[in-house]
Structures are given as structure tokens and as C-alpha cells.
Length: 288
Image (cartoon, rainbow, N blue to C red; front, top):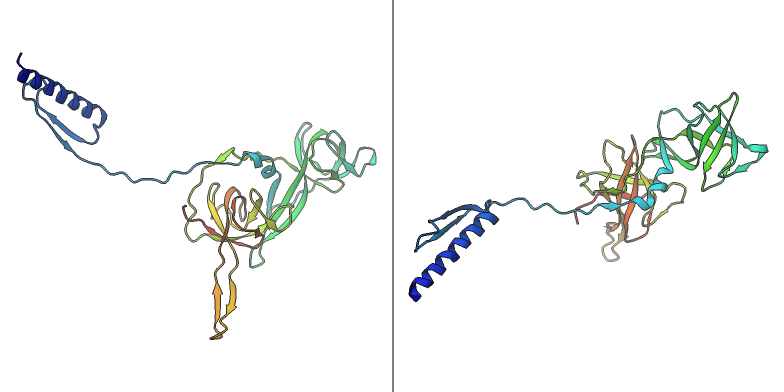
């Protein structure tokens, strides 16, 4: 075979290989038309058709496992719901303060032997900006197991208690809610607005990874939704014109909803740029 024939044969094999690769790798890109590969003067004609798909913003899940135990220590008794009636009367042998491994005596306990109860102290009475009651925060001090039901007194054994259990602490059957290890961020409906109304058991200042309560319930937000925290607007007077001017408050940080109740929700501070406090406004966070 002469040199010209060799070049034609090589070109034919090369073009055939290109046709095979295009057909295998990008069948979705468009139609591929090819002449028979074994022809000496094979010609491959490509007629691509592009299909454009919407590019979705990628979101990484937020790990909240380090705060799981703290999240389980807070509950909200809904407005109108029956308040817990069971409470600790005293520790064994008349002790006023008890801890893990101790036994306590309690009244009005309804349950079966072996059932576990949370030991709670009342927290903040939640109210919205108009003063309407939203519920009662309950802070868990520990967990106890019912050893011996009785009337009027029942005996319980404290299984774990990071805090001291004192007389008067209230008992509630443990709920079955467990926080997820991760939450996938999701968009919050535009126009959503509310306020931070409590930082359970820890004062008024709020920082990174703190747990807070906001005055938005399950009909307004859902776990994973993000809200940005806004500083209060400040008024200033123009010294030249005497006009009253308003300086809008900046973004202080970001919250993520973790658990919702009827009229309030627990949220975790995932970003803190400036100091925050109870009373600060929150609104739907824009994607960033």
C-alpha cells in the first residue's frame, strides 16, 4: 500500500474512533450521524443539540450532633396544654438535693414500673411582641426511672443528672423526639419575620452554637430553615437640617430551625458576626 493509501486508512480509523467515543460519552447531547466506518473516504457529521438544565445551588448539611443533648433538654408546653402535675417531694432519707444514682419520692406520678421520666424546672413564660402567651419553656435537669408506683408517693431512681435535683422539680414522661445528626439547609418563605424570645436557662446574650427560642411555630417554619438576625434600627438627627434619620440595623448572625412547636421553635445559632440578644428581630435569610 502506498503512502497515500496508508494516510487514508489511518484517517478512516481515527474518524471511526471519534464517532464511537462521541456516541458513547454524550448520547444526550444530540444526534450523531456517521457514514460507514469501513469506507475509504468516511466522513463523520456531528449535529449536536444542547439541553440546558437549571443549576441548583449546592447546600452542605449542618452537623448539629454536638448540641443534640442540649436540644433534648428543652421542651415547650403549649399554651392551653395541661401543666405537669407530678413533682419531686424529697430525696431518700429526707435529702433536699439529689443526684445520679439517688432515689427520690414524688407525688402524682402516673406510669408503670420501669417507665422513664424527665425531671424539669420551669423556664421562661414565652410571649410574643403583643404580649400573647405562646407557651412555657421546661428545662430538663435529669432523667429518672419509676421504681415503685404508689399513692400518695412513688419512688424513682435518678439515672442521670448533670444538675442537682431539688424538691419541687416537675416530672414529665419523656417524649420520643431525637434531634438528627445533620440538617440540610432549606429556604425560608420570603417575608417570614419574628423575634428571639428566649435563650433557655442562659440569660439574654446570644452567641455561636447557642440554642434560642423564636416566636414562629410549625405553621411558619420547619427544621432546616435559616433566618438571619437583625440589629435594631437607630435614630439619628441631622445636625444641619434637623431631620430625624434612621440607620437600619445590620445582620448580626444566622439561625437554623431545629425543632418546631405550635407557636414557637427551637433554633441553633450557626453564624455569629456581632453580639446578639433576646428581643432581636429575625427574618428569612437570603441564599449566600
